[in-house]
Length: 465
Image (cartoon, rainbow, N blue to C red; front, side, top):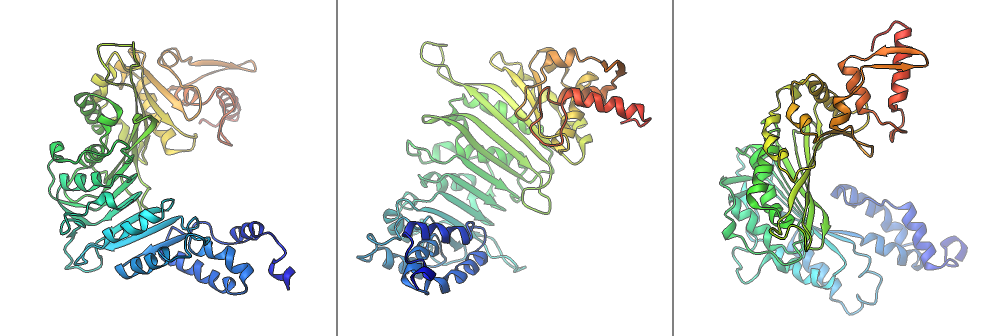
């Protein structure tokens, strides 16, 4: 029997075996998690040799949907044998699910768990019920009736708010500010009775760690996407945490948001390249939404800053925006012809700015077709001529050397390949510039040399690209 049950195997080996044959992504859906766990219950009852390695897998992700579940888990965590069992290190993630319609919030009761499970990640989702035509969205103020308790008592990592009403944008900012360990906040379909900008003087000062790095706001009722993006940047405190002057950041953000169509529905802002308590990059992504959450058109801006070190630029300790990289993905590439590129001119003309870069991915991607359309307009001198003449305009393929303003200005129309001379039209010149000089990263893509060889063969066969 010992060979059949694995009793002769070290516990670590048996655990690895069970980890290989059990689902690793149990966090996607409640129904999926419950189904997967039901499949593990029977094997865990076979014998003690299976029970011990399977118990941590069963407890890896837990969900709390009411105060009774919190109390039940507390009774386990506070039991005398818990600390010596295999469970303290096994509970990786706890999902907290709460409805905004509940008469009294119980989120503060999770505090007792978060103080004992220091290595566990706590994620909270708050929803308003859907499906009722007469339903009116609800406010969610979990600590309003218990002023002696603050959100900082609950150690959350992710907070998702679906269909919640806020009196003001400041109310949302203050709520998020108080979760001192929060890393990411997602607000889907929020409603603001007063959509005025956040009143910064009313916000609670964050702890020194300032853990929050990502904020997403989407499908906000009666709020333009540019306002949603500005609100997300405000909540993350982008300017302060990058060390950029408020007015300089506001001008940069306003210029970037002028590129975003009014039909877009959501914005996502996140900080990157952490340097101590500061960040050297911010990403702003605005998009429309297709049949699925993250499909549709998209405008993403990656903003990088440079912060003078001691002894440099002694007159100012503020960071300066030094580069902007745009990745644009549109089904209708003709939309590029109506973009207000001049909105970026004052930002790009700054003496601190190194480059404005248009980024794209592989040659069959939407971002490639968009970059090609923009580059064609640059070659015709109908758009971004001022950026080209400043020497700051670049087109970049992911993980490749960029095509600089000098490359664009001097792009050759004629090429000789194996004794055959061909002349490239504007569209072909743009494609050639966008392709890598060396071996491409993506399978099926061509280098500039291979592209010209393909052109020669295509034209010899009488087919025009």
